[in-house]
Length: 428
Ligand code: PLP
View (tube, rainbow, N blue to C red):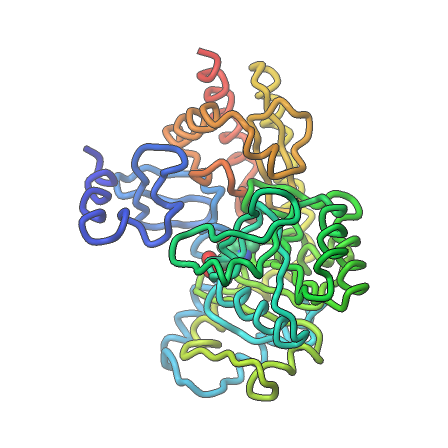
């Protein structure tokens, strides 16, 4: 038994499923998760001493690689000044100003502790601001685990949502309408029926929780138009795409400006941080200036702000985003070439430093339905072959991959060599 297997057996006795977040348990790929002891740069090292080239990056935050020196030093210095005060601090102003400077839609911003908190509150704010109850989301988009957002489509296009999990009252879920990502006609249809009651559309502008699916041309623009027409609030959930698809997020890249934006992952530099922000008139609807309540004991925590600011200040490097793009291109084109050479049906998507691989016979994957129809057996076998060869990919076919600034061409080439072996094994 490996040390990781041993730890997993132990963990399951004290922690539900042995993990503190479900996807870590490897249910999507089978087998036992690896327990990581430390990470540095592009690499993670497990409890058995094996090194992995990491394309998960703690599920997105590690755009600068693990154990970044400036983040580490800023965090240490903040720790020396005290862990939490429960009062305003100047670092929160610096953070708010930095986010405003980077994200086009944000005029005011409130810090929270996770992406889930950010989306949950953005929804409440949109409902309070518009005085409407219904919200519209897209099948396959994930926005954290708040009740209103853990909802899937009922049967038929124009039906109301049903809970995705026990514990969510149907009375809550019925206010969530769910339609098809990248299908603007389904949005227009549902607005024609319910538009005056819809507080908000929430969308991942680049979907990263059904693998990686960029928006179809005109889709985000269409959402903007529909929201303008019906007076609904457009929320871009950029918890994942923020600072990844481009420095200013997907909204900058696609030049579509939402009313509210939710952020997380990269803004914490690895610490638990989220944020929501947007138009001044909407943000001033939140307590203590406005009537919509929201609060947090540790929100704007000085250690988390120090880590996040140290991360965000490194994104100003002009070379960073073109380099990330070039690395992702090297990886995805290399993967495609190797899959083609092995005769494995395969296609890829990418957006900035996010990417996705699909074991699909379709030339292009643009929808949730296509993502769910991929060859899962191929994915699982490929996954374990790559893992054995020291390449750590997300243990689920429905997660985007992430490139960091410190992955070298040699790391990518080693990944491609491993992929050649893995594709060959699929043929056996
Ligand atoms: N929104 C998106 C787009 C996400 O990808 C995630 C997490 O993966 C969340 C929200 C929830 O963030 P957190 O896990 O920090 O609560």
